[in-house]
Length: 393
Image (cartoon, rainbow, N blue to C red):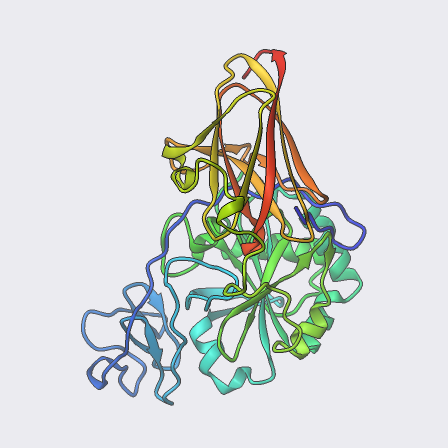
């Protein structure tokens, strides 16, 4: 749902499926593992352009790491994080970019460790990721509009350090920092602040990157806000079909937080769950759907529900209905072979619209993943309608 639009601009189709994992750092460092006075780490750690690295993670100002806790010479400790994923209400893993681009074309290393710990960033209350792709027409429309009317500059003035993250090029290849810079400056006329980076160059270097599987990133353009004081991901950039008041969140990232409390009570319970629960929490245990049946179920925790459609050579319609005042549910097709979202032309296949439900047409056999957007919970009804024989490509 909540396919937000850049002011008056319609959004693109759901974003490229982003399958990934990210290894990070876990625990507390001792004096032997802290960086030396010249900023170079001891042991088997390399340096790159004067920036110390530890297992491929760029650090700044002599930052050392051990078991997931990052400290600098001033004693700053980076918040603990789950190290492999991005999620609302969680601490952002301490990723970084070497030779990130500034709007004037200059190069500068940028790390979240440094943003959290270095006093030079004290004027900012939040870090804002604005996520786009070169192939995305709605991204270009938003970038052009927000650049022309000064929206990005107002966000910075309110206390947000903006990072423009381009996920993919026009040919669906992971974007480099240079790719992102070329796209962003062309679309905005250079009227932007902050940093411009490409998903291909996020460190630690893994393929795919940490940004490419998170449900935090839905349809493009999109993004999220990280609070500097504790590096928690506190808000998306849009909800309910409109852009949020980003300036208000940047000024007061404690009061103006819109993400549901991940520890808050669910809007449904065991009595609402479908008969296949909990076996259908995985694709292997998917519940079979049959034409004209009405299945009542619920997403009452952070686990998805999987369903299987077996209609070879037939086109069909799937209808998922729920009460949007209780929660926001979505569904996408799932590829059991890769255990990841099914892609078509680089995008996830499924439904994520605004309203009281989701309706989607497809052809042939399929596995469907139903889940709560931003941790939403709600009871639902799901039904399958056979539309008859059709060629399925």
